[in-house]
Length: 161
Image 1 (cartoon, rainbow, N blue to C red):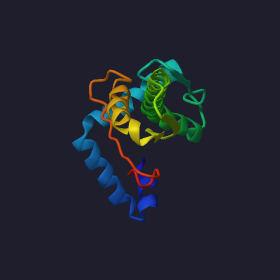
Image 2: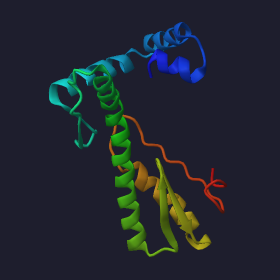
Image 3: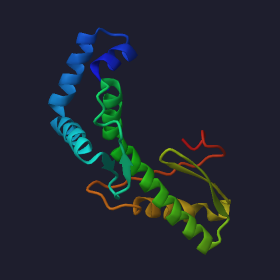
Image 4: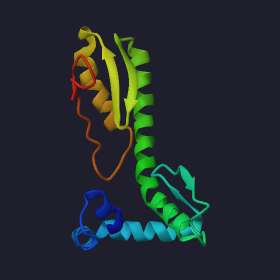
């Protein structure tokens, strides 16, 4: 987010927002490097990729119109992370779905909410599902950082949090 956007969202002076952005990038220089490198790569290639190689083409990345170009740059920065997260949850869903089908438990996947999967599970199957689903989900991708999976249980999605 730009200092302008941050100032508007928080209702603070733009100079204060710029100080915050500068401090953030000073503290996390790798983030700034990633953003800058991604912009350059997107401009050169015309697309960005998820960690699994799925591409998002950015036709406006070289646009003469600054607003179109800046929107494409923001998309280029966000897409690899958001797209990779989407790829991972889809892989997790497929693995869990196969397991549920094979095991024929009293459990079914009901929906996905961002990076969460919601299940309806019979009491008899709860222990096994609580054990196996996190293992399958955390194994959906091999990354440099661990994929941590938490389990919540409740009569509703809200209660499970």
